[in-house]
Each structure stands twice: as C-alpha cells, then as structure tokens.
Length: 111
Length: 112
Image (cartoon, rainbow over all chains, first blue to last red; front, top):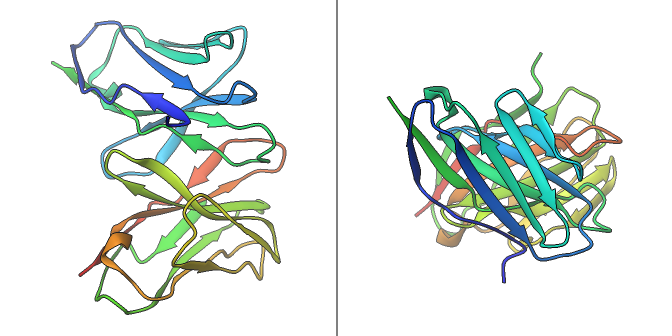
C-alpha cells in the first residue's frame, strides 16, 4: 500500500463549480499535512497546510480526519487558473523535515 | 531573489555516462533534498541533507551520490547513467522550524 494515496483524476469541472479531492495516508502517527500545487512542467509549490481543526484560505478549505486517516481539499468557485495537479503531502513521524508526496490529482477547469 | 536554482534545465546522456546536477539556494536554509518525479509515481526522495557536511539517503538513493560542502550548494551526481534514471529531478530547501519546501525549477534528464 502506498504511504499517501490520491485519486489521480482527471477532474474536469466548469468554471464556478465546487470540487473536492481526498487523500488517504497509511501511517497513523503522521504529524503534519499539506497540499501542494504543481502546474504543468513546473515545480511544486505549497498551497496550504492542513490543521486538525480545518483551515480555510479564500476559496480553498482543507480538512484533516485523523481517525479515518484522510485529508481533503475543497475548492469553491473554481477559476481557470486553478487548473493544475494537486499533491497531498505528509510528514511521517520521526522523519525530521522529510515529506512523502502523493502522486497528485489533476484538475482542469473548463470555460 | 533567486530562491532555489538548478542547472541544467535539460540534459541528454548516454548509458554509462556520469554527470552532476547542480542545485543552489540563497535563503540560508539548512535542510535540502533531491527528488525525482516519474509519471504516476509522485515525487520520491533520493538524498537529503540537514546541514553542511551531513547527508543521508532517501527512498531511492541507488545510482546517485550527493555532497554538501556549503549551506548553499547541494549537487547530485549520477555515477553511471541508466535509462531507468530518465526522470525530472527537483531540488528543494526548507527553512529551519518549518516544513514548507521551496523547489527549484527542475532538470529534465533523458538517458538513452
């Protein structure tokens, strides 16, 4: 089983739609969680951290469910510029600053 | 404001050749790492360093060497290139006390 699993998609949604991605992780002792965004043929960039209480940044909401070991990302009012691959990222316990990346979920927002 | 820089951007090697991928950061970050990204596999950690003079292996270290003689530079050396090393290579650095990784633009390597 992969340490971090994501639905690869692709998700094709119209502008203005709400879309949600889920991610599961296998190590129940994992400490920190993140969503990164990667544009086509570019480097990954941090989108947001995921906190136990859930957190929101504009149109983006991240949730963590430790009991079920999954993380979610909700994007409201999708824009064309949201088209990218979204990477679920976990910091396993005892691994200093090492991060484990999921293989990504591809989103295309259609006009 | 350079951040993390990588050279070259593209490289084609023949099987058996060796080369060094360069990575430098100007943010005084202690932690640096090298990943490879293959379709459907996500980013996989090759080697990492927690500071000058200290390096350690990641998930897929075979066929690669690293060194960290300064805080700024973290080169990745391919000892004898193989077609299985065809990939996109990303270098990243992390600020002390945080987990946010800043990535370089990547090197696209093809081994024929």
